Amino acid sequence: MILSDRDIKRAIDAGDIVIEPFDERNLQPASVDLHLDRFFKVYDRFKSTIIDPKKPLEDIMEDVAVEPDGQFVLHPGGFALGLVAETTGVCDRYVGRLEGKSSIGRLGLIIHTTAGFLDPGNSLKLTLELHNTAELPVILYPGMPIGQIAFEDLSSNAEHPYGSGSLGSKYSGDTKPVASQMWKNWNPEKGEWK
Image 1 (spheres, rainbow, N blue to C red):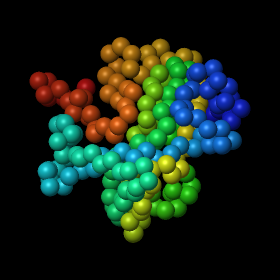
Image 2: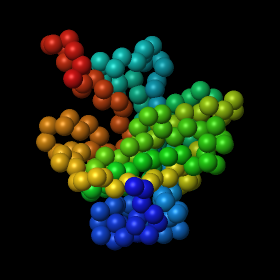
Image 3: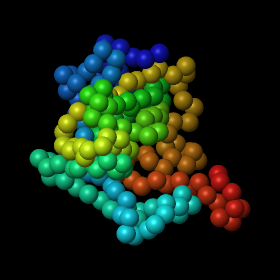
Image 4: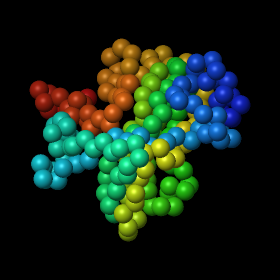
């Protein structure tokens, strides 16, 4: 069941949901608006001609930090990793679902290609997988509304929250954009994916 604005406020007050900083003006009927941070990660096409998920990608990506009052231009067909400015987290009872805002979608901007899920037990600055589907460049400004997060109550508390045990949690507590860690799922000795 998706939490209402009233239940989101209660969960924040109880510490079961974290949104830091939280401004009640960003509370919607069943979600909370989130804003764009100033840190990005982009592929450097001159360092590699291919993305190989069996290998670390840090060497073919570069970090971009824009000034708080600056801008980041995403060209047509362009892709960049970004972050929401707020740290968001949930206890082992909830999940979060990141979605784009209608006004952002109408610019031709997709804010996540697949990873819009905040696992129980995780707390981080959510990664944005930004893609410009428009035919013109789009300017992105730090602090602009970029998405919204809704929360759902689990049928029971998660037995193994994100970051616990041997789950292989690769993105726990991220505060900067992190390249894909898919290569950690490849076992070269066995020649198979985990």
